[in-house]
Length: 180
Image (cartoon, rainbow, N blue to C red; front, side):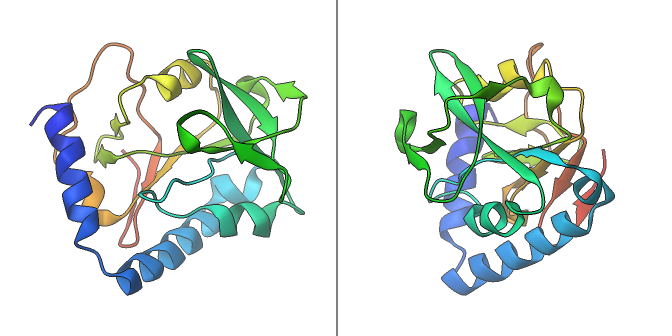
């Protein structure tokens, strides 16, 4: 399957999950993430404010905001800026994604851990994004561990890759932790 077909398949699979299955998966994924040594060691984390079709992250963002510095991406033209997350200090930005309003920006190379959204992954860590390349441009300068969190139904045998694609180091689903 090509990337367009995989994106469609991912949406179809996720729609088949019940609300209860989604909630149980969210709890299991976040517990696995929080138990990872990479998460525990990280002081500065770049996460994402989830869209309705992504594994929810708002509980994670708010829970850890006191103990760790949490940052979110903000679209700036063709690139992602990184700004500090504070509960209640976000606004809808590009693509209707909640973005931080903090004006102070930091560089991705100062982050200890990246939690990366995706439409799907394969077991090699290859990411299927939404097709705009924002995270590909961001990840090329990242030097810290990269973790992808998804529902297990969004795991594919193979995601087609291009030269600019950067895989993640760990994939966490409700069923398993995969270290390619």
